[in-house]
Amino acid sequence: MTDPGLVLDSDTGIDVSPQIAGPGARALAFVTDWNIRVIMAVAWWVTAALVVNGALSFRPPVEESASWYGFVLLPAFAIYFLYHPVLETALRGRTPGKRRAGIRIVSRDGSAPGVGALLLRNVFRLVDSLPMFYGVGLIFILVTKDSVRCGDIAAGTLLVYERAATDAELLLSAAQRTGSLDAVGAEIASDLLQRWQSLVPEARVRLARALLQRYQGANADPGDADDLTWRARVERLARP
View (cartoon, rainbow, N blue to C red):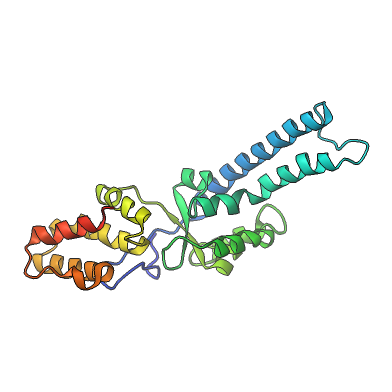
């Protein structure tokens, strides 16, 4: 279900409420990511140990070896424990597991979370994983309104479902990459273009004017423009 309290924007009269990801989607994402990071960490451990020891062995050498700890142990642990923070930062709240489940991490205002929030969210995995098998995190997901774990509460984040890209959203993706629209503006413009034909002309003009004024300032009002001009202005805003 959608969360009526999570509204990305209402200034123009178009409210966007993403669907909160529940325990099932979160579990699918976690299990997928867990398998990937375990396979990557073990693959590194086996390959590096073979290079350092000259034989396939998971045990450290009999004699203390700085190269074994530095080249075998530490990188394997880094792969396992830094998998989530690194990928979530690089992919703006996504990981391979989250992509498979069709979900992503967002801030409470609907924007992509910052590095600090993502790091804090992952530090709290230590709490959520207690006493074992993410017991604390699972309880919080089941009893909280927005299906959030302790890490989400501390970082101010949510997991929401990705929506299938429409033609309008594909048009807007370039604008987000070039910085002419933020995440909220892209959602508003996308929704406006999708609803264009169902809106009365007065509503089209009012919403288009509000959107353009927000991102183009004084240059937003072309005067007594017709319906096609207003739509073209919104579409042009979305192009790089």
